[in-house]
Length: 75
Image (cartoon, rainbow, N blue to C red):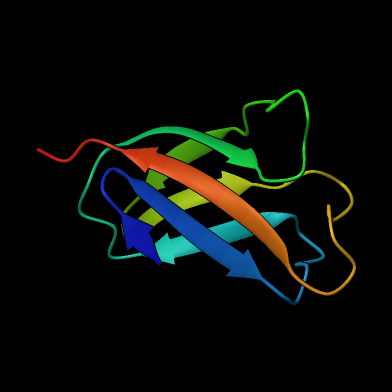
């Protein structure tokens, strides 16, 4: 779900690789973090040919559905 410059990514199945591929993301990602993380620690991201990969923490912030917040450049 996107609201303004923020995209919220709902992650129900935590990837074993801890890598979340966002295929076809056309906007430049500025920052990513886990909702529920009081420190709002930045997650690392990298561009790949098919989109952007966000590296998730070792454990989800919520047992049922964790949320990654991603700020993007609206331009």
